[in-house]
Image (cartoon, rainbow, N blue to C red; front, side):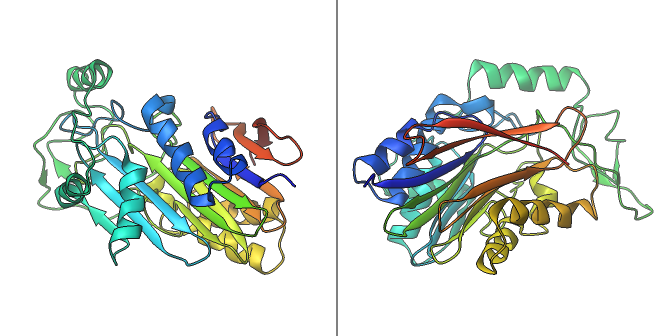
Length: 319
């Protein structure tokens, strides 16, 4: 019997590292870590790993999460600086502390103490992205109810003396952020999930999205299945779509319907949000769903299982 049952991955990254880990007898955690680490080093889509998505100060920071579906242990890091292997640090948090999430400079110090090498995450590409953003009056940015007017000017910003609270319209930018998310299940019923990203381009320094938040960026239970999400993390994390999808699968809903229900829950409140989710249950069935917005009619993801015995590109129509 083939060792690896199934790996499902957000976006079109190279899945071979993960599949090979399962095929060679590695654990599902190894598969998730190796797959995400490969994407971090290859800077997938510029949205994962070093040298991408500079924040308002021009710095690249990383978020990552890994979850063990057998024990329900989670390790995560957010706003990680100077360390390229964010998913490795997340696993170290899970395996070498009693905590779930470490953030910011303290997470970086922890990583260095665990033996991870401190390196500059800036590249010529990220410097150019930041420089062009400054030349363009810092557009786009994610400030509101501040002075000077954020739609026309760079900061520093201060709160407006008076402002009217309203629900600001959010418009999808499918190029500003993305995530590598992965679910792995083996023939013995073990399951794991993970994410890694450098977050939202031009984000406010210190911003953390959905990727390192358990139940939002990813969630897995070996008794039910796993899910991982990508998109507008500031919106999606409010709805815990990965947790919702797994609980639906636990109740017997098939993965495609579970994914669609998770997206529909968000659409009721934010019809124009950019987002997608992948799901896989304990029988090895899988599915995906995405919100249809301008520029996103289909969502592509990768699957490797005992039927294909190799990574295969799949797609789903957005709705």
